[in-house]
Length: 340
Length: 251
Image (cartoon, rainbow over all chains, first blue to last red; front, side):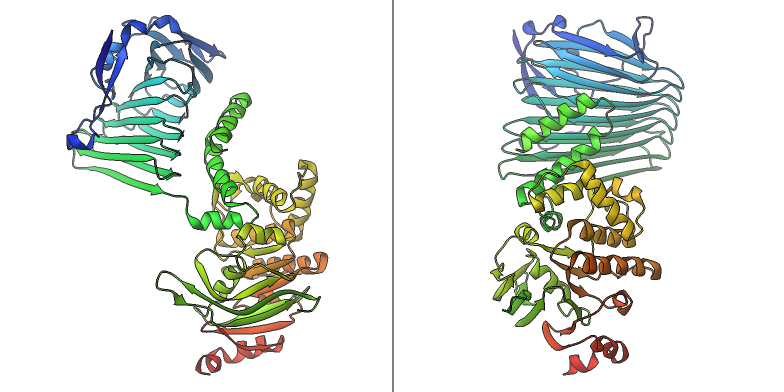
């Protein structure tokens, strides 16, 4: 049965007519099955275990997401570096809780691929215990007929560190929600999202850094390239709750527009419930600077090749972080395909 | 145009911006193959504009005149085509390109310019040879293009590109500014090697005579208010170093 769900609702509303407060999505829930998602784990760094329970952090996707999730989660513990592939063989939902135990330091690469015309829903909560350090690299390469809902939640305990590097290239419509709750003092969160959208692809982002404990730090960056008639909305929220003294947060965006038909919206929000905090926002939206194109042209690249080289090099900084050479090759090929 | 002429600028006038502010005014300049020409002049005289105009800089509008390179009119040619013809511009403020190493960038550039695929082993040999000429630390070429380089390192990297790409004509726009004494000497060695080893032609825009020590200067031009106020030989450099530009400005 097809029903309407509110998704990526902004925590603070603006004029409704701007259409920036959130989105409504129609999903036929009867077609969404848990069995349509396979999880492949590579390496010994992550193990499935069902002996860990933790209250889930709140979703940045909004209340309605809970109606779409299955009650049982896959519970896992990170022991060291690992790579996980989530493969959608049809419309499906996966709900996971991933724990990084006290003092553990690891890099987790997650690749989301496959096809799901009704919806591919990935809801994953990360619990970082004291002094845990996790670098999460999430690569979304779903087929371009897919509606993707990505609900990332994280709870950071004292002195923990979470770095999220992500690349969104696939799917027709993507809703990316992430709510990172900085619960423990000195917890630190760094996010760098990259996207490359062409055709009529749309990306809807709702990122929240929830500063609860003192001296917490967050830095969210979202950079991307829009081609053809692609569109994107970025909502970035730095929420300084009462008591988070000494907290610092920043959110930045760099958007390259390569067609007059693209649509780009940005909603940076800084909420201050505490006086002793520092919140920064910056954005750069536009074409690639003439100066840099000219420099490359003087070195023999024609204008199109120069633009391709600049964009390709932006994604290189991300792919160079991947140890998996095959994955690197796949992404480079996809980037080249979009830019050709 | 004699057979020995590589570049001929005739009656060139350029403007900048929507208000069409005049920069160069009726500039004539003829450069012979293998020669070294020095362009000097006070700040704001149009020296960099001259370099950019030869290299097809999009910020400048050519109002009249022409630029002939090896007998071909390149006035309306795009910068990449000019580079393919063999012209190189060393930037006063080289641009940073994050995400691509200098090694990979230079190999791509050389492939674009020559239209040939160059094997890694073959390219690395060319690169090593060029790095040796200017005592460049090999680690620089595995860093992203100009990213995090000091001002001096960026200038050195421009000379490295010159030695790898081996153009027929190189325009060096204040390559010596911001360099310490040792770096000026190193860069000067590189320029000299380009000229002696590859028979290169040079147009050097500079304020500093030190960079010219290792070079035989053929001609010096004093550019004032967009015009060539005086042309002469190497002796003109000493004269300007002693007396400044005042008499040309007043004149």
